Length: 314
Image 1 (cartoon, one colour):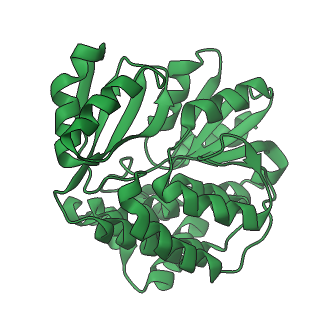
Image 2 (spheres, one colour; image 1 turned 60 degrees about the horizontal axis):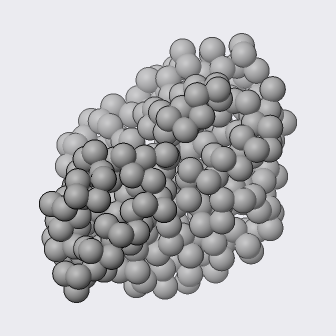
């Protein structure tokens, strides 16, 4: 059996996340305390108690999801003696999850990762005024077939790009709101089963995020970086890298570039991965992997019971 460990992106957050871990494991509680100290905020209180509107804010959701994922990693290590580098062939993360993957692979410290994601969340939110940009999920069209739809949406004069190639038949568009609304309106004419506007506050992974990419270039160049102990499959490459400076370069590109998740999973499968383990909140990535590759074993690990079951399996 060959394992890849993957880390969820924005949208998987929920009020109550991490509470059960902190109640059961001292090592998880320590992760949440370290993150709170790094960003000078009681983020864990928002994770546990909400309000939901505060948790959904990009600047909170991004470090919160990373904290939850890293709490699972820390518990596996400290309580069960399972080090990811001994078990994983690859790590990968969806969008912000790539920072969690990098932290888990030893590229950044936990505190630096928390600060980077707070900066990233703020920069992404500030890059485009609220309501100017958006995103939409196109269901039932392949990545290559969505080009004609994108071209039609650009006739509005707005930016429209494929932001996420998630799975066979699931592509996410990003850009100006008028172009995104046009996509929702006309997608069925191009063969889509559905096109749904997503409840996000900014047009992530599009050229409209260029101001945020500049902020992240500065922030990433200022942190201590190490080579990855586990090869990290980069979102913008869909192939693994381990050199710390290369990882930083591609994290900057990722702000405006497409998340090539379908290709990343294909790379895993073609290189012998049998099991994909999702560490952190929700089960989104496990579902996406299964959608394309039913033969791959997937498991989502979020709660103490999940962690104990994984520890037994490994």
